[in-house]
Image 1: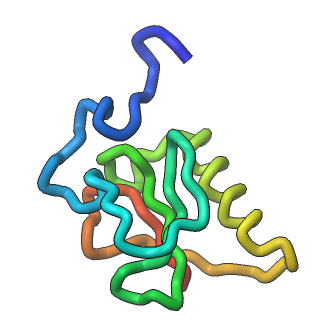
Image 2: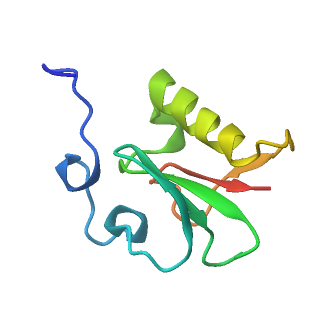
Length: 102
């Protein structure tokens, strides 16, 4: 992507917040998947659950259709046996888009 509509991730995100633990992306638990857009990792508070963290400091309601598609696809690929996984919005850091297994 290029131009004014380009979405930037990680430290390039204009909303990056050094005080936000989800922005800092410290590797405190097992990481299942990572790309430029997201990380799927074990939840530090509930280690039996996975969570998806967007590498962009925005509320979940502001995720682009492409971000929603990619995070959903990544979660489905975590369960190749067809297990249905319910997700819930993370409540602790509401200003940073992330989802938890329910």
